[in-house]
Image 1 (cartoon, rainbow, N blue to C red):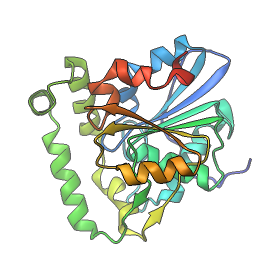
Image 2 (cartoon, rainbow, N blue to C red):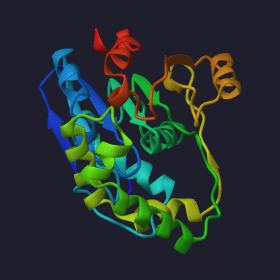
Image 3 (cartoon, rainbow, N blue to C red):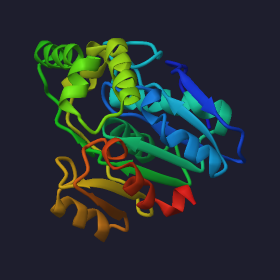
Length: 244
């Protein structure tokens, strides 16, 4: 598959298994957000490619970023390792939205897509300065100490990883796509949604809509938005098709 020359993202590779898995973290996170998940996938026979999204981790920043270009950057950045057809692609929250965008536009065609408590729409039309200011405040609030206080289910390593990710997070890059037009991408039939229950992003009506379209929806009752951080064992149990 041919791609426009564009941004190359940082991709951390784990394992040498015969199957490939692409991991896309959520807003303000980084490839390190998957530190507990990646080893399990390696044990299950995957070569794991954990991606830093644009403006996150060690990936470049671009305050003119769009959803389409971000999706293409993901596809191009993993293409050397697994082409456009990884066996598995898993996206959390904003990473799930970008995964859906990549699949909907055909630049990434995973054997199985897993969307973890992900929104599938972006409102668009945000005032740039307002949204950048919101993200700047979120960035400042994600210190080790504040994460420990606000997320008691985080381990010490979780706090270290997410505080480090916040330090590297570029609000202007993250805000740019939301200043454009509204966008909506549907999870493809045969894919899986794992959602917190209750979920702020996939409510019951939305879950039922996706089920009718052939999408499997699995709930983790009581979980936080970052499901595997608060309910790791339940998250793994919800995906026997992945972690077997």
